[in-house]
Length: 393
Ligand code: TTP
Image (cartoon, rainbow, N blue to C red; front, side, top):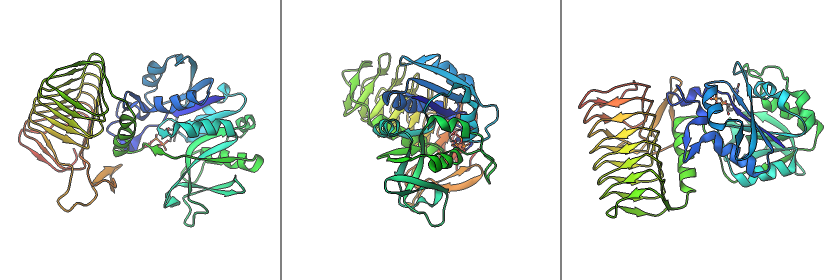
């Protein structure tokens, strides 16, 4: 079966991280987010991957090329991001026979993707306590009988997880009218498939839709925790590595460093001396943690640097970020309330008691900067030495 993977979106809710890197290419453990989706499809037996690209398309194309893990990869360009059905329709010339459609910004439980392919026609669903904010499936006698968007009175607690195995006939049903929000939606294609075929619901044990910055952190918590201990890099005899720590070949861990796994230190990264790394932390290629710095449950994108005597917790740092010496990130409020974050101009709860900062590419902080919880620093933003920053910039 061919797998059509949607990766054309602009990722507006995850800005500034997506300012120049498309959301599906943001780092999740040792590979881009969308590579986890494609891996699940290949493990389930996909014999070709069709990537729908648009926003920052070349970054995706350059990474996967014409073949990935021995499976041919082709590309369809969606010129305007007019919705998920429009995205699949952009790939229609690549489709023949039954085909799967997967969101390139979702992490799926790989066993369920196996089931999805086997049970075609099928759709993945996840059981949620309150499905009112999702597309909700109704079912009868083990088949899907309908899908309704964001219902006030959900028929089940099965939320649509954005993974579909369609019969060949669905190729003719890709042109659907725009929905109320003005997008051509794949769920309208699914509705026709449900009318014409017996569609099986496949329940996912675990699923994550990465839309906002803290969900990228959660994606890393998931995938970094899945790694098994492997020490291939240059690690000082005076460093202590506990639990599932991966130090890739070409990474350096200096004397006095303590790393409590799960943690991933990628090739070209340097930690220490005397640094403390804990929680599910990703230190990506070329990133640096300096002397006596502490980094907890965070993502350091390629070439990000946390200088000596700094603390970073529950944060996402973009590429080439440079935190000056003594920069301190606060990740907890005195009143213990959930940390809020600004998404497209609106303050929303992250649902997390602990959340630090999101720094776009090339942010630079002055020495001894204090950064408030839930702070967003846009691409290239700077702070002055000794500054306390509690407003986004
Ligand atoms: P969304 O998460 O709805 O859109 P997005 O990724 O652009 O993010 P944001 O809402 O923050 O701007 O998209 C779901 C999936 O579908 C995702 O993998 C991107 C993909 N997609 C396309 O490929 N083309 C499109 O026109 C749209 C709307 C989404």
